[in-house]
Image (cartoon, rainbow, N blue to C red):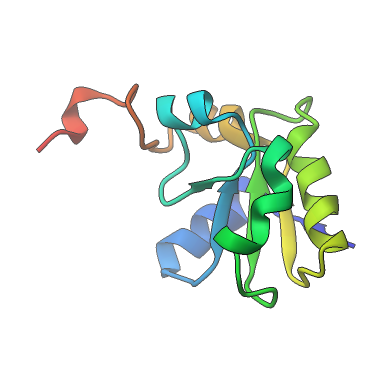
Length: 116
C-alpha cells in the first residue's frame, strides 16, 4: 500500500538532493504548461507504458496531479503498485498545494525570471 507524502516532505527530499522519480499524472498539455521541478509526465491514461519510463521497480516514485480532488494520481499510484513497483508514494495536495505555498514550477507558463 502506497504511503502519502506531504508538501514539506517532498520539498525536503528535493532540497537534500535525494534520488527519486517525481511523476506528474496530468495530461501532456497540463504538464507542458507547468509542473513541479524535475517531474516527468506519465498521464494516468498511459500508465500501462510506465515500464519504459520507469524501468527500476525498486526506485522511489512520487506521483501527483492537480489537487486532492484529482483522482488521477491516486489511481496511478495503485496501478503502479499493481505493476510491481515497490516504493510508490502519493502527493495528494498536488500542483495546487505546491503553488499555494509559493514554490517554483517548471514549464511554459512559468515566470519570465526563469529565462536566462
